[in-house]
Amino acid sequence: MIGFLMLIGIVTTNAIVMVDRINQNRYDKGMPIREALVEAGKTRLRPILMTAFATIAALIPLALTTSSGTLISKGLAITVIGGLTSSTLLTLIIVPVIYEFFFRDVRHETKKA
Image (cartoon, rainbow, N blue to C red):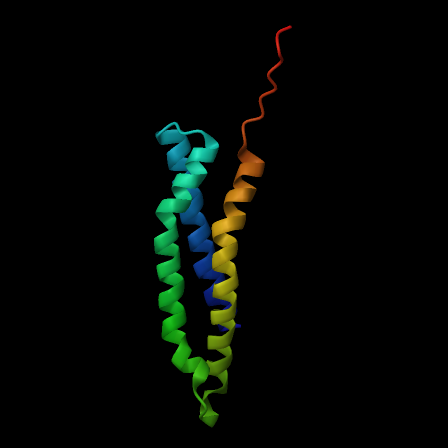
């Protein structure tokens, strides 16, 4: 349960930082939505991956330990490593897709005949 709570905190922070960067690009810099999404993905990719890799690297020794008193720690490490691996990819791909789906500019331009 503690591992799941850790995972929720990390993933939520990554998503908030990504959406904040997209909003800065759109509203402060005046970028179109696609350009804002691509730029946010490029600039936030490294920090998000570094957070995930550092956390995973710190938890690998806990996941690989074989002593009998570390059953709780091993479960926590495996939960966070697996969840962080999958959720990092989802954060980098799904968050921008959902953002574009909900916040795209809907403009129906009619062709002049």
